[in-house]
Image 1 (cartoon, rainbow, N blue to C red):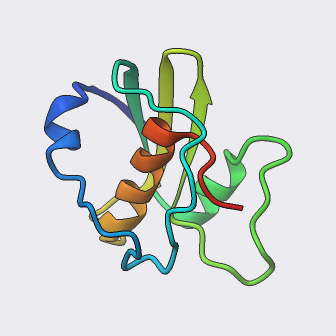
Image 2 (image 1 turned 180 degrees about the horizontal axis):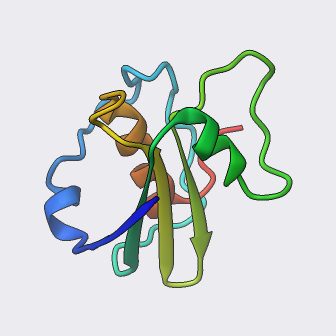
Length: 107
């Protein structure tokens, strides 16, 4: 597991404006808007390792793929994802970044 701390502005420039995304989710409503935070990215070597680090109470539907999740704390966001060299799925990383910015915006 590798941790990388990134500046937020380069990532914000990659964010799109579409309401329906390629990950199949629709943006419902912003819980908050966080634009000034410390972002930490934790890269996992496999989906199995990622699942092992899912916080207590984190829910993944039976049989569903898990490629990323975010942990939000005041002024901080930690995005966990499977290493892109294993499975390249940038839409998952962008989805979790949206949680860092807008909080829990979907059910």
